Image (cartoon, rainbow, N blue to C red; front, side, top):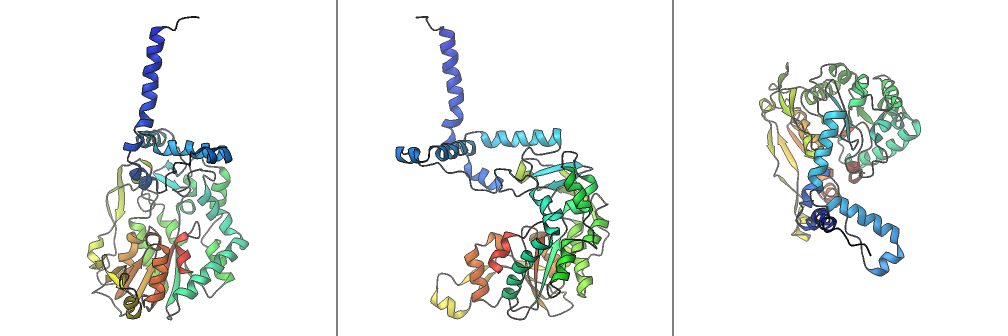
Length: 399
């Protein structure tokens, strides 16, 4: 028998030790940080007892493979480095969450929770194709009417305010890596021909606010939107509320800063999600000049009968805003997704008292409890602020 070369054995031992390091560091890796960063639940360790493995070997080993991918020591840092490389070299993250960078424009393409990336351009397809179909619009309206009936039961006027998204604002800046069919489809969506216009015709009783024309015009300024970050921020929030107030005849607060906006350095929120961060020039106004009193720790009380029967659950956290400069005595409530904090004070400047709720960060049972057991819907106006590229999950507890 041929003797093993000692140097080869030494090399094998060293290589095995190096390869084992990531696996051995699994217990010490900061898994909660990665879970928060990627906005998803990491894969759990499968049941490895013999009976489970034999009954479903394929599923077990697939889950085990995903578990190692998600928990391996150092993987978090490697993924960050890889995404930054892709972004700097190819104008993409490597995970198809965000692509672009042509003329400073970034495009959000799909949900961050989507681990498999099976539909990498899901939101583009939704807003430029699916949402433009009558069948999809009919189903959309069915759900909208459920939430409208629920949140207007005290008599509040309900408005669905939809935020124009990047693909419809600057389709000429689509990255070359994007499928041409999406660019072509998005160009066909105009202020006169879009899913909101169609749904208004299908159901005139539902009030939709969708300032696509104003946003398309403003988006020619590279500092307006998306401000080199996919998230809604800066001057776009002021334009959104200005168009809203004009359409529904709400008087502006005397403290409203009419502009022009100030050019300043703003940080990318993209860095928290895909590991790519920088500071860029953006356009914004002085939010503090509005003088809105924001009490983010306000515990909205549930009714006395419920509180008496459930002494451990007497209130739910809601953001309450008071406007000492209001031109009316109206009260309002606004339901939003993650865009809410960027626009809620501008919205609150139109009313005496305003409540802001992000159903996505309050668990569904609590939202339903709040709406059922409190009088928080006893307001003059209820606004539901939604993105235009899908029917958001946060509306489910409002239905």
